[in-house]
Amino acid sequence: MRCRRNVFCEKEFLELCFTIGEAGIIASDDYVEYKLWRCLEKMILSFDNNLHLNVSINEIKDIANRNPFELTLFEKVLYVIFSKHQKGELLLDLSDFTVDDVLSQKSEDENATTIYLSCQSREKCQKLMDEFGILAICPENIKDF
Image 1: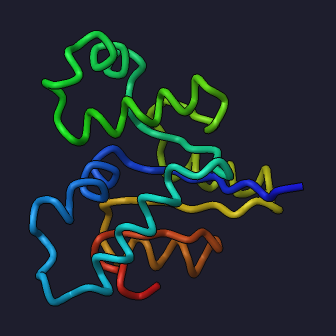
Image 2 (image 1 turned 60 degrees about the horizontal axis):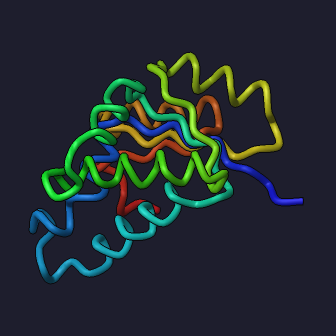
């Protein structure tokens, strides 16, 4: 039996993750950081996830009804995630969530890994890791992993 991960991903983090390489934000000589972001992309789209996104279903429906050639890269990513969910390739929960929701999920399913992908500060993420055992990744601490 495969172990599932509970991945809570903030919309802002998701957008940054999938556009950082294309936007040239990472210096071309920082290959390690680039690879870390690419690994996060693959993890987010993995079948082994219970993916929680703070995106509304109306936003997804709006994207699905638009011309695919007019979508931004981030909108295409949302479309792919929702398509994978509809095909049964990804468990997806579209709802606003708070840090309390992340902690609650951690306590409900102690055997699953809980990952929080956030644009919060390094200090807040470190506190979640130290006090609650949640893997909290933000742009400031990505090189720590």
